[in-house]
Image 1 (cartoon, rainbow, N blue to C red):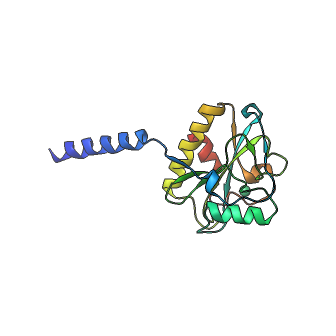
Image 2: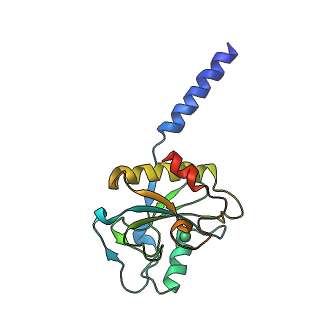
Length: 172
Ligand SMILES: [Zn+2]
């Protein structure tokens, strides 16, 4: 009898896990802004979803925004920031051409995982949210979008030595 309850419990957890919908908090208008404005684009120009990391543990969306403004940019460079607890923040609208990959900004959406992912891998909650977010973006913008790590497009260690891009691609 005990075994049956274990099985039922397992199935329930599994179902809950796969059915959990993704909650996205749009904080675009709440973040600090710099001078000027990013250009806009039609969504048909987008070809890539690019994964980044913050390279600093404890760094969140507001920290990124301040750092990017200090570089002279109009605002945060990423479109989404995923916290270690799996919380997804939208930080730019998808039609915004923000700065996150040199020479490929017009064609890409940037997602940053907060944390130094050269020292430790993304958390299970971050991975779960990332996979759900990429699937959602593909559904909205197009299934042909290619998923790349920043370092696959430019010479950089980003999104960290412990971020497995092949695994992310296989899940999305
Ligand atoms: Zn990056």
